[in-house]
Length: 370
Image (cartoon, rainbow, N blue to C red; front, side):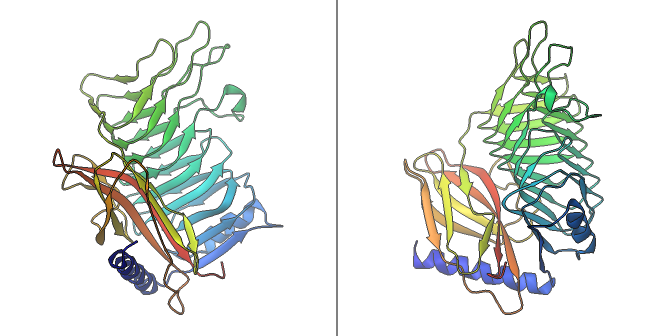
């Protein structure tokens, strides 16, 4: 890594630390040996807006509700039941690094503030309702079989979006397969009165059984739009890859995909490794900010999940191998427990003169005490 790039990263890190200080945010460790499902909800209820909750192991058999701007980060393969994010209209909500084991795994509803969902893994459905600024990155959603249904759970889509705007990068979304006793297969993605942008994702409709048809990769109603680049849409037997009503806006292209790998959590003194891949010869940079928000990209038809970047750091020219960079973080400023950055790849094809938006990630630096 060049001296210039190191200095740029350190400047941004210091900027993020100062921003954290201004908002008086803190880190709360929850979970571990002897904790109960109720401990997590109690910690959420007691937390102040802007706090980070580091969830360390444990399984929650109850619905976890978030109704204030918080960051919930799973530390080391944390499993919880399911999460409802509702009525958040300031700051932002970040939820990342969880295995969700119950039906209706995530529901985001009535949130005008940005909601960022990253590295979530569940066989159950995710719903986004009445929320105009939701980003889902590096997640695997949906696809459970009928025998995985819990009592009262209704078979549903892998990702259901109603009256919302959602961006997805490098996600896998699965519909629910059909069953021999009459349960229909579902689409991986369902959108109604919504705007969905997807880059580098896989949408796989539920599979069919004898006497049934499968689900489409995506089902887009007349009042919705889907803009997808570098995505695959696979359908169950008898269905279409994408089923859209007359009047729906659907644009699917085979354009390039640029991936990004950043750690979700880095502790003080640990090195930071960054990996970017994409088409050979493309110029790539990393846009960084500490406040996310979906905005139109000024150089492509895509949406930026990170809002207006605080800085854009050039990374280099892609080759046949991933571009890997490593540096060590600066020490934490006294009295500050953490700093967070939202990053997204921006790329240029110099031959065609076309710009692209790539994968997005959030990275949090924690004091070594955590």
